[in-house]
Every structure is written in C-alpha cells, then in structure tokens.
Length: 318
Figure 1 (cartoon, one colour):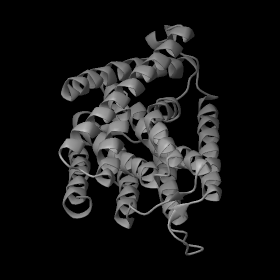
Figure 2 (cartoon, rainbow, N blue to C red):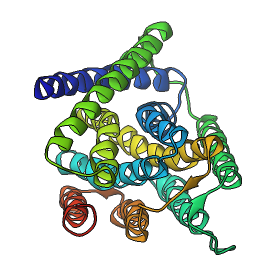
Figure 3 (cartoon, rainbow, N blue to C red):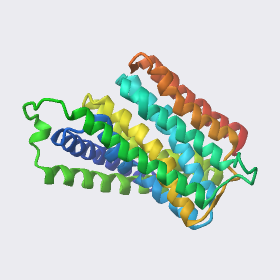
Figure 4 (cartoon, one colour):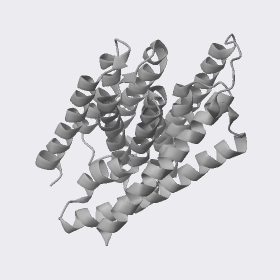
C-alpha cells in the first residue's frame, strides 16, 4: 500500500507544482517583478514550507539532528540534485545580478551557519542558540527587503509593454493557483515523506541517515517539481530563483524560527555535511561564470549529489 501512496503523492506533487508556477509567473508579469525574484520570494519560500514543518517539529520534540539535518540535506539536494538535474535537460541562465548578489548571499549564509553552529568565537558545544536564531532571522528579513528593493529600482525605467498572456490572467485566479498549488504540493509531499520513511524502516535504515537523505530530499520534492515545471515553460531564471531562494530561506528563516522554539544542539550532523553544503552553495557561482549552467555542468552537479549520498550510506549512517 505504501508504494501506491508514493505514486499518488508524486502525481500530486507534479500537479501542484504546475499550478504554483503558473500562478507565480502571472503575478510576476502583472506587477513587473523579475522571474528570479518571484522564484526566490514566492515559489522559493512556498516550496520550503515542508522543511519548515519538519524542522519546527524536530525542534519541538528536542530532535535537533532532524531539524538541522533536514535543512543541510535539503540545501545540498536543492543545488546538486535539483539544479543539476534541471540543467541536464534545460541549461540554466545565470545573470550578472545573480552573480553579484543572490549567489554570494547564499554562500555567505551557508558559511554563517557553520560559524554559528560551531561557535567559533566562544568554543562551546556545537549548537544554534536563540541569539544565533535571531541573527539568522534578521538576515532573512534583510535579504527579502533588498531583493524587492533592487527589483523595483531595476524596473523603474522599463517601458510599458503589451500585456502578455500571463498578465491577462485575473489576479484572484493567479492567487488561487499559487495557494492551491502550494496546498497540493505540501500535502502530497507529506504523504510521500511519511511513506518513504515507513519503507526505509523496513530495510533497517536508521534515523540519522533518514533525516539527511529521505526526509531532506522528500521535503525538497516541491522545489524539484517547481523547478522542472518552470524550466519546461522556458523559465530557467525562476527555476534558479526557486533553488537559491529556498536555500537562503531554509537557513535563515527555518533554522532561525526553530532555534526560538528550542536551542538546537547539533551532534549527529558532522563537519563534512556542513562542508558539502557550502561547496554546493559555491558550485553555481563557479559553473555559471559564463552566464549559464550547461548540461555537462548539470551532470557533474548531479554526480556530486550521488557521490555524497554514497558516502553517507557507506561511511556514516549505517
């Protein structure tokens, strides 16, 4: 029965992603917001809701490894797995704006997380305190504000153009598509993760491995579906924004909020996992230096994701 539910959940994820992206694009076009910003702000934040729920519950139950492992694993999967897989089929455009602002911010908050977790300035036990969480929340607020500020300034001098099909879509319908798509995505994702964990338990896989892989990848399925749906609509900037926005949101908003519930004592997530997360955040900036992430680069990224999971399976978790 678990396998039937998995298949149904996957279908729901694909269906929900298509509605979400269609609605988000309509809103972006109507208000002259760039595809990247709408991908980072609306789609990226929306598709990260499953990570928020899982990490929040992990914090409430005192399971910091689930709360942090979910975010670290999701960020690795988002870049190496999702962006890599998307680029294999649809080479992703990387703008100069991405190289100057969003990608460096993604790298910076990844490094900041390591500094906060390992308490480089105090030398205490690895953890994310409430004060650390507040720092992350402030970073999230600054990123969101500046993203929309830059986008508004960029569009001030853009001449009015003829309305596109997306702009002709009524605002209420676009909002319904976004909200409905998110609801279907999150519900389907929850079903997928629950049943994937049940199946994994039958094979004797332990909790630490499940949090960094199955739960992390499962809660990132909305990002995968949304990125592929955006790429199919020839909108790779929205796909890139979804991935980068989700990663920044995961670290700053999700861990920031979770740490307010209860300080997160990190023990099962190793320095290697954090290192891979930072490397993953750096990869798009290196591979996109010529303005695009091509199919070969995408294949390398995806192979890196496979290699990391092979490492977990053989050296850490079981």
